[in-house]
Length: 96
Image 1: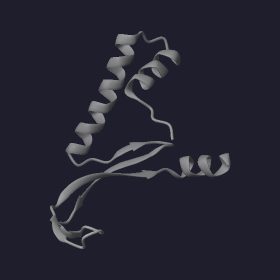
Image 2: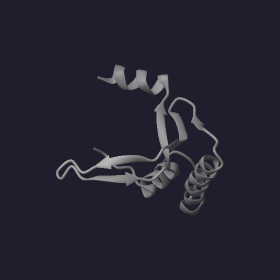
Image 3: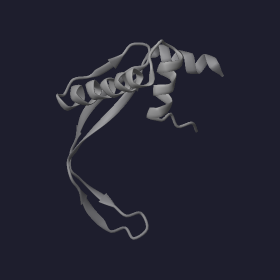
C-alpha cells in the first residue's frame, strides 16, 4: 500500500509545474478547502476521470461486539463515500 501525503502532493505540484513551494502549498491547501466546503454544504465533488466524493447520511442502528455479542447503539452520522469514474476503473482493470 502506498500512502500519498500532503507533502507528496506539494512536491508533485512543484515538479509538474513552475510553482515554488509556497505557491504549491497554497494550491494544495485551497484544493482541499474547496472539497471540504463543498461536501459540508451537501454538494457532490466531481473530479473528471477520477471519481465523485459524495456525502451520505447513515441512520442510527444497533451494533454488536463480535467477541462478546453485546449490543450497543451507533448514532446517526454523515460519511463521505467515493465512487470511481468509469475511466479510472478501466485504467486500473487494463493495467493488470
